[in-house]
Length: 158
Image 1: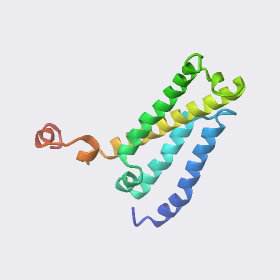
Image 2: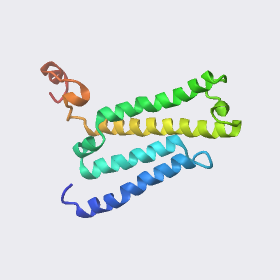
Image 3: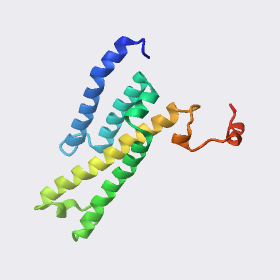
C-alpha cells in the first residue's frame, strides 16, 4: 500500500481520532451509552485500520501477537480480580460498594475498573481474530506453532 499516498495520510489523521473516541466511549460508559465492549471494538477497529493501511507485518511489529494474547488474559484478570477484591473486603462477588469510601464511590470505581478490563479483553480479542483471519495462508512458527512437513501435506493447499 506504499503507492496509496492519500489513504496513508488520511489514516495517520484518522487512527488517533478513532482511538481517542474509543477512550471517550470507555470512560463515558457509566454516564451514558457506551462502556467496555463498545470501546474495545472501536479501539480494535483503529488497530485493524492501521493493519489494513500499513500491512499486517507492520501491525504485528507495533502490536505483537504475544502482547495481544497477554492483554486478553490481563483484561479477564482485571474483571475477575475486581470481584475477588469485593469478596476479600467482605461483600459479594462484583458488589462494588465496598471498593470506595462510600457505597456510591465504590460503585463508580468498580464499574470503571470492570469496564476497563472488558474493553481491554474485547479490543485484544478482536485484534487477535484479525490476526488469525488476515494471516491465513501465511502461518509462521512464532504465531501458530511450528508447522512441519506432515502438517503441510494435510492442508488442502499443501
